[in-house]
Image 1 (cartoon, rainbow, N blue to C red):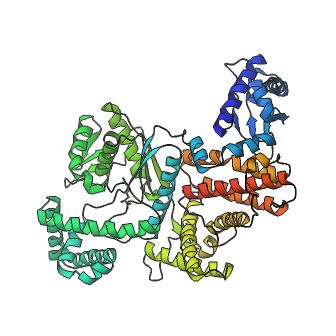
Image 2 (image 1 turned 90 degrees about the vertical axis):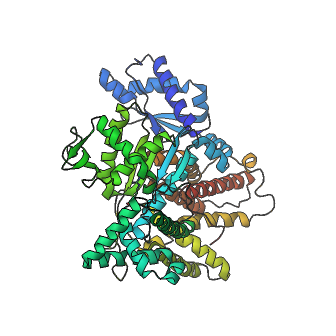
Image 3 (image 1 turned 120 degrees about the horizontal axis):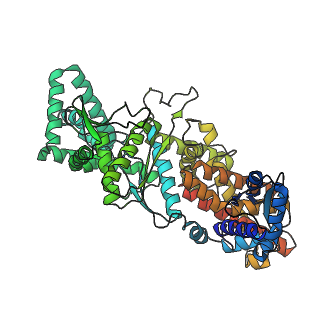
Length: 586
Ligand code: ARG
């Protein structure tokens, strides 16, 4: 029994066996074993208390009888010490040998992965994230979806799932009328070459402005749109060109952020699949006509019994809801997804709740297997005033500019910290630090809350930040660079058992790694892993300042180096799951 999960299930089953041996009624007793607050131990078994309450007997006596029976189990006794706390909680504290054993077994990323990979084995997950509308720049609001989505993909893969990264771009619909109108009359070829998304955005804005001033222009924009929707070959050719330019432009930013999609199945991909949606939902009795539109109500729901889910507009056109229903079907049937995750801001909460309710009923009526659906939503990035951050001109900040500024500012910070770094090395470190810092600032707050953007905070070497964690990792690398020959060989065999409080606390923290990954992915909240990594770096720091690593006593030196190695492993692995690269030095 070495693996975190083996330990948890071993404790559960031993507690059950112990309950039997102690003569407890197994139909009323459940062990409720869970990782404990580290001040009290490693695991807690809480089941004695509710059991005793129910039967109106003394909980401490129940706990004592369980402890006696557990201590008689040699597998438990060899790895843990038991004690009773409070009214009848059982604390399980692992012996130092257990930690050393664990750290020897889980010595590589592959080993950690092997342990986690059982969690979502046999799952096929489509993750829909990023997903901007085309022919526009991405602005700062887009970063959260990209960064949170990518972390979720990496975590799912680490936990054994097969992941499809799908960019559901908004590449169909009304904006194209205005864009095409302006494109045909006001295109600046040179600007399009130089900055395709910038030029397309300019043209769209120009088209909108002209159309709002002049009804004749508006009419021409409408005609452009009708032609596109009728799939007129010239319109489709232009649309394809615009989309290709858009995707190329998006990819430049994705490259910088280390994100690669498997597919770009945008809204247009589903345009021929909407008829089936109307038919099936009407046949199933879920959709009804209301003021000329086709809508779905949910009578059992407080709000959605009156707030319609419009799936066909009164002018007969499909909309976001229709393509999303078709998307659900495609992902379930063609991509064989067992789960679907969609990452957007929280303003789309209602849309996805209605989508999920509607899909549930639709799939149930048509006898289809429904993938588990999660809408991973997030709050705004704000300034000090609590309003979404804006550039000086009052426009949203372009994502490209944000990234460039992050790198520039990181460069200054790195230079200050380490003035002796050669120029080109500093530039590459600044690139990593800058990008990591904005990613981490996005991942570390609970995603459902808004967060206040602050350059000083996110580039700080103190607190729960990327620079702090990257620096912690780089500092450990430097320990290994300074070792003498042989210091680093056969560490596990040379190591003696952990002795100091700081050693034990750090070992325990490292062992929690897989558990932290599990809670993070089960809740789809990357900040949980950030918190863990921050605590881990804190435990390392406490250990490192109180325990000299390079000491005479070889057993102590070796066990401390094991702790350094594994802290580095957990930091590196954890950060890479968050989409963050670590540095050799900084
Ligand atoms: N394009 C949408 C937006 O910019 C996000 C799409 C999310 N995915 C989806 N299947 N609806 O808000």
